[in-house]
Length: 88
Image (cartoon, rainbow, N blue to C red; front, top):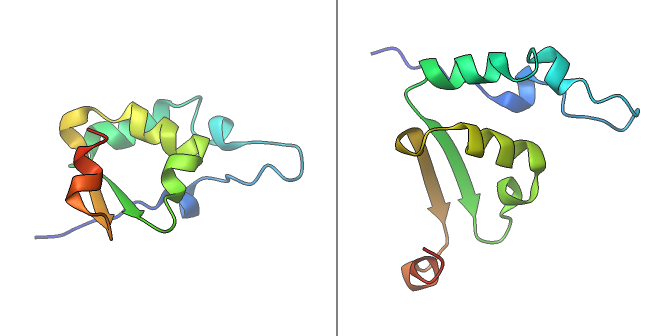
């Protein structure tokens, strides 16, 4: 079985420090991302309890929100299940 991984940080310019945020233009106003999600088996989000970075970045939240729930997979490292259950 062949596995392909698409890492958005390498595919999309997420740096807006120059005042020009080009990610949506590069993604054809989101249509390219929608196509990528549609043809993907899953969107994998990795969360580390000490640094829950994806949930603090607007772009990550956009990708998570664009993914159908049945395709969204969360991998959580270092979380106590009692803590997680309290938020679900």
